[in-house]
Length: 211
Image 1 (cartoon, rainbow, N blue to C red):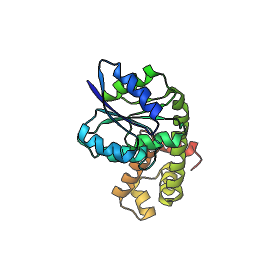
Image 2 (tube, one colour; image 1 turned 30 degrees about the vertical axis):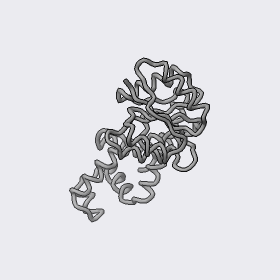
Image 3 (cartoon, rainbow, N blue to C red; image 1 turned 180 degrees about the vertical axis):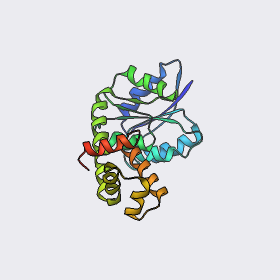
Image 4 (cartoon, rainbow, N blue to C red; image 1 turned 90 degrees about the vertical axis):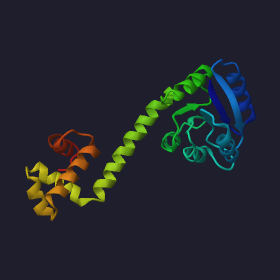
């Protein structure tokens, strides 16, 4: 039996979810709250398996609940139900510990399937958010790369030296680094750019116009 706890400041939303869950043979509603502080207090004693959380609420908001709920043992799975589809809300919720993010106009069957899925350790997101989320993540990665290279001149020097065929020993001598440090920095760049080896690293640097 999946123990569900609802956190939403809108009575109509809570009523709808309460009715929905009451008709499921594998679910039971163990509690509900209309604000974040009350939710944390009750969840500590009621031990729900799943929290269904709104993001915008008075007092402690949904993100605050997500962060605080991670301190419970065991940590309940959290499904966000929100009217807000901006990528920053979705990413912030996932970073704070949410296993699912659905828009409130989602079909009841979708919400129920999501509750069951996150209890199995799966992740769920509204289909119409996937494209926006991927676009935002791609832009985040590009911005991260720009910041890394803008604030780390040595990274560009290493890439240019590799493109010129320099060895790690030669690069270390040029940049006054140990060979171990140069190798570590190269591995960091390989991971950052999502390539497999130095050859691909140089090719990617050339493609991006860095060397």
